[in-house]
Image (cartoon, rainbow, N blue to C red; front, side):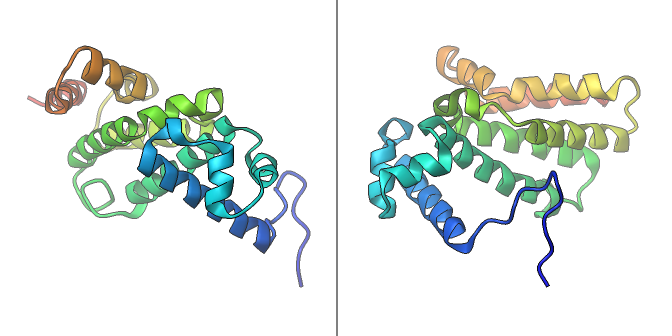
Amino acid sequence: MDLLPLADEPAPERSDAARNREALLRAAQELVDLCGTDGVTMDAVAARAGVGKGTVFRRFESREGLMAALLNRSETEWQAQVIAGDPPLGPGAPARDRLLAFGHSRMELNLLHARLIEAAGRAGARSYAASSFAAMHVRYLLGELGVRGDLTFLASALLAPLEAIILVQQTERDQLPLEVIRAGWDDLVRRVIRED
């Protein structure tokens, strides 16, 4: 027997709508891989997915919405690695190693998707859920490490250097190699956790 959704729960997606959504996201990702975010248009995505342009607009409303959906998909995959992936990013490693792996992985992900984040514009601003997940995870690891003080503030301080806008400025404008940025972040972590 099928149950009706709760009042604040979205209705289940029809199977044909889910297939269309997946085909559109796959087509958009293929275009990003082939020609970068600038080469992704609603027309190109529709043609590659074999649907009408109206289907793309109905599903994502705008190009920014489509880019945000690609970001959300990537974020979901990354979160799954943090929650249940291999150590040290996933469970099974000491908290310090997990924290360092988290920062390195987040840097790489944000640099990889920097143009996609930019193309998503306002729609690509990190969702509350994504930001909350990262902050919660860092707070948890700081707690596991016995760090004292305002863990919410300390987590925010550790997350700020991992944002795409800062990383792009450092790697492109300042021409800093990623290894230097990674070493700087590791030093910040050591200071926060008071490791000598």
